[in-house]
Amino acid sequence: MQRWLLSRRLQEQAQIRQKLERYHSPAVVHQLISVGALKNGRLPPREAEISILFADIVNFTPIAEQSSPSAIADLLNVFFEEMLHSVFAQGGTLDKFIGDCIMAFFGAPEPQIDHAERAIATAMGMLNRLDQLNLQNIWPQPIQLRVAINSGKAFVGDVGSSQRVDYTVLGGTVNLAARLETICPPGECVITDATYQAIGDRHQDLFIPMGAGRFKGIDRPIQVYRTQRHRHPKPLPLKSTEVSSS
Image (cartoon, rainbow, N blue to C red; front, side, top):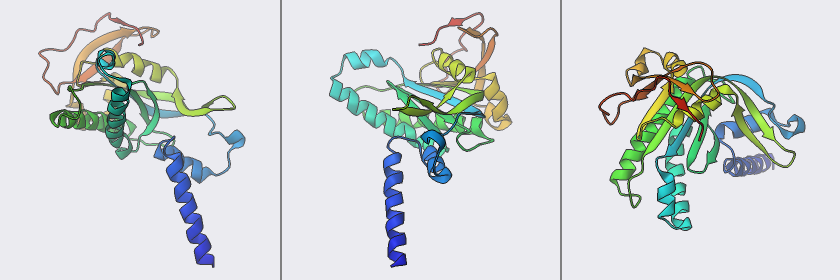
């Protein structure tokens, strides 16, 4: 009887985990289950060192204009499914989908000292996987991706109302990553100097300097680096560039 009860309890926990993972990242589900009962039912915000990643489809609006709503839903379902393999394979946490954009972070809820390297590996995995999917003609036309990564301190935890909360990240580190994504060349990844310094010599060879850019709401120039997967002829000039968030 005890064995049967234990087996039943494990099956119920597996079902609960499976249902939760439809709404939360695996790392968040593990945290929720491990900590048990929570005050006010929330994971309280705390400061953490993270790397934040934004990835979205290039020229998605024209694609959406030329397609039916059901075709767009099918496209995004396949796109998100394929791209999230890279996020979860590196122990990342999905923050949210913003239209066609994926917002994910590394370094929370569990600390990861190599969060920047995990974010870079995720970005390269996304870009390479998308290249493979385009060769297979998964969609009516090839899709390109822009990926931006920034590293630093952020507040991480449940934020929202009494009816709904999101496990998310907040702060200037996140805002800069969102602005950085707008200047990324199609099919490439851009990172800040903070991420570049955090990944070490082993991964720095993937990136070339892009310039020092000024971004809306940030009072200092930010050194930006980019990949050169598609061998663009030269880095884009960024000095004194004013970039607005999208």
